Length: 472
Image (tube, rainbow, N blue to C red; front, top):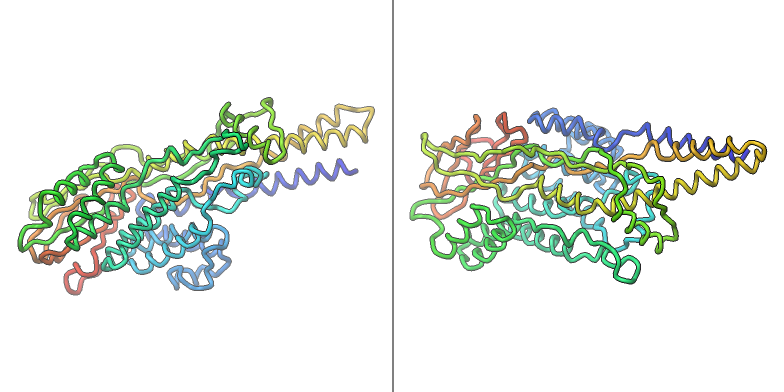
């Protein structure tokens, strides 16, 4: 009778897990609308997700722009959906709301940063990784303050430098992590974060702000870091040359910065992978700590996250005035590439967790098999069948953890050029335009949100550079 109850419990687990949508399926209506550049529909979809996750009325989310105190960012994955909401608010021209949403998300991310408890991390989540608290991908931890710095420039830039410094602090914390360094106390393990490339956006904004303030030597040092971390991007090379040998701008001119969020960025979907030898090695090291034995037999393909993004060519934008080219964007950060590199670096541990999980489920199935055999001594076939069925029931509904910030761009591009004082009507290509009021010796900022590069995106100008009476 106990065996039958175990079988029924296993079936219930399988049914309940299978019935739940995978994270990428749940976010798909928003992600697809966003990728198509339908910002209105995208915000409608993300409002529904925020409401569902936070347990509030969708109208409350919409009416409050996601900022009502009843919307608790730390509840489940609410903060992740608020990151998506912040991008939708940006596309709508609500930079203030976008900043506040990202600030709330940043605070949750900071509280959930994964430390060095590899044993606890390995032991958790025997169903699958989707039941665990989402801690945010490492690149999301870095890009959240980076985007705060960029969005703040649209509001006047008073806090942009502080946010840019946070990017560096978060990045160094991640790169200095001991996660996975020494699992068994004998120096065996694997630290994926040691392979990460640094992100240049924070350093670039540091340089931009310091140059704007007239501190050329400090600006040069920041731009130099951005150049080294960004693969000698032309925009960084030019910035280093300018701050070491040139001038901020000619007399009577100001500087226009164009930031382009180009293409549909990295999003995780479910794929499969075999358990690799390196993953089994890590799993068996982990079993020393958590008291499990992971065998090498019977390890079949397991669900894993796979990065999808616009990996094709995303051309630079030519920026014209009166038919004359005045600037051209260049890629400062390949966001999709960073995400793919980090997922690949973490894959051995993802597979190791899967191997431990499968091992634990195989043990559970064997317990059921032995119990059934004990109650049916004359029919061992039923016990074997019960074990197989239990193992199938426990594994059939497994899902890869495909949660991620889906509205990030594939590429982050930057242009910088000087224009004479006055109002300029800029042709940003692809049917996009911006009217910018340039002040002598000052910076102006234009942000382009263009997830679908085949259609015009949203264009925003900073509050001090908008011609009188114009909207964002």
